[in-house]
Image 1 (cartoon, rainbow, N blue to C red):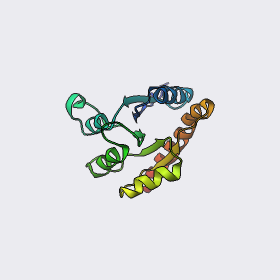
Image 2: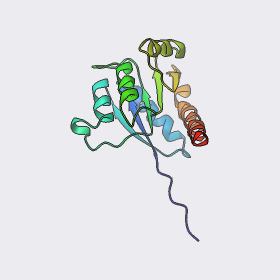
Image 3: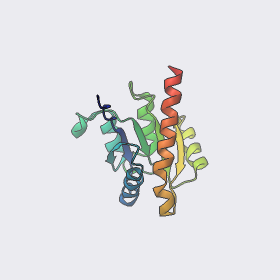
Length: 153
């Protein structure tokens, strides 16, 4: 009997400058054992843009399946990263989740002021248990998104 091919991991680009938040995100995604993910982490907007456009040391980078993006970043802010995604051929439909310390509506307004749109807006939870539950939230959102995209094709 033939075994099913292992599911390829969902490649997630995390654009976050706070090491504690990166660690918590890593733990949150690891808790979701049924969702196989590969995390790539960059700590500022410049690195994110270089990664996404395969520049400098990221020339061999492969396109992520999902971007988790903080808005308050060093060098270039999250709206500049999102703008690069939305205007770069091959990236424009890349799912982007804004994960910010600001409430969802505040983040959404900041993005809309830049004439941009993300796919989902989440506020970073202050409680560690709630932060660790983000893995489940993101997995469910991503799976719904992929089903909707498949149905639309």
